[in-house]
Length: 134
Image (cartoon, rainbow, N blue to C red; front, top):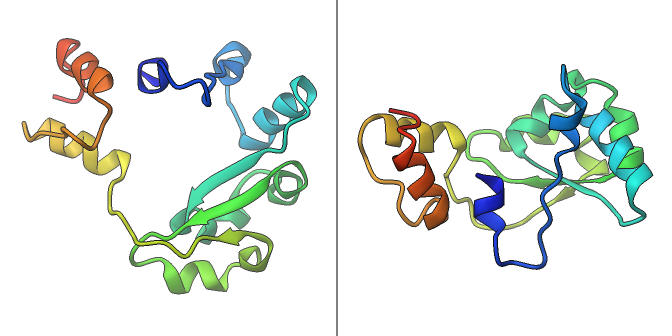
C-alpha cells in the first residue's frame, strides 16, 4: 500500500528495511540501518501523542542522535507533550490540527463509511478490492 501511495512521486522512496530484517522492529534499529545505507539527514515525524510517550520508546536518546524529531500536533495531547523531557529537543510544528489517524480510517472503513480524499485513491482501491478493514 505504501508503494501505491507514493507511486509517481519521485520525491518518495519506499524502504523495506523493517520487512527485510524481520522480527521485532525498533525505530532506533531502522534509523541505524538507514544511516548506514545513506548519508541523507533523517527526520522522524510523530504526533504529539507519540512525543508524550517517547521516553518509553526503546533507546530514545539514540533516536535523537540519528534523526531530527518532528512533532505534529494532535488534539488532546498538547499539555502532555509539553511535559515531555524531549519537547525542547524536537521540532514542534505550529500547524492546524487535522484529525486523521490510521485508527480512525480503519474504523471508518470497518463501519462501511468512505475514506475517499483521506487516503490516496490507489490505496483505497486496493483496500476495497482486498476487503481490508471490514
